[in-house]
Image (cartoon, rainbow, N blue to C red; front, side, top):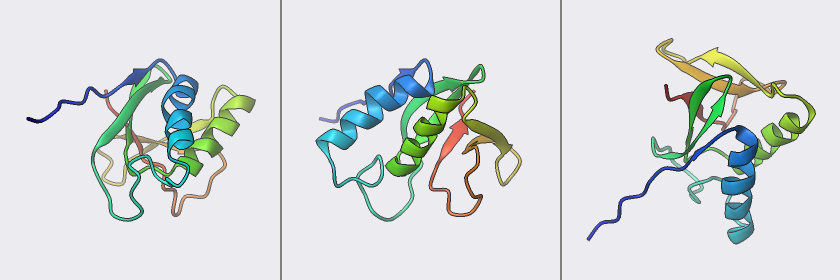
Length: 112
């Protein structure tokens, strides 16, 4: 018998970080990514949150330390992210303000 996982949705990034990311890291201190893996990519959605009146999906291979960086920026400003086009220009993704473009390991895409 398989179980169906309902993907949680949060009203903003702060709520997502405090209610989804922090408890995961406390329960699994060795995790570097949300999915607990160390290599490989996935298209699995870990959670959704709202930002700039849009719904965003967080992919499970996002690195927890990058989410911490975004949270720290969010604590200083209401606009911690920059909305950029995806590589194929078919959608939008979030990038942490002030972070280098290469090797972001931050996989958050528009879900609307």
